[in-house]
Length: 90
Image (tube, rainbow, N blue to C red; front, side, top):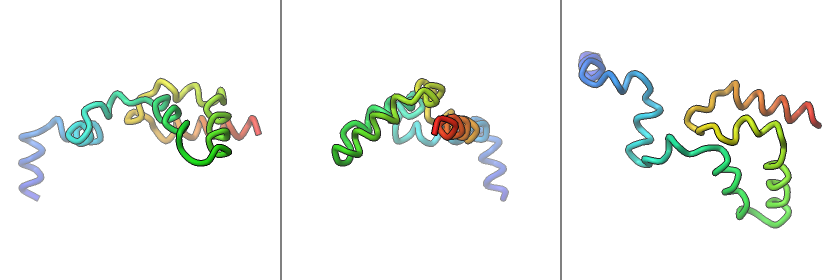
């Protein structure tokens, strides 16, 4: 307990937003990666039918709110809003 308190006092930036600090160690670009990059990455995965399904999903307008959002800043509310908008289209 004492060690944790001392660490928090010495390194206050870790307490602010640890999900931003730790990915920087292994991947400096992780805080800049956006959902559009993930969507583009699905183009080459799976069978042709899967790729076609992903292509249709990428064009769905409810996902527009996520496209330019950094992955690390995405909240559950953002994903839920996109999901509900997609369900409304179905």
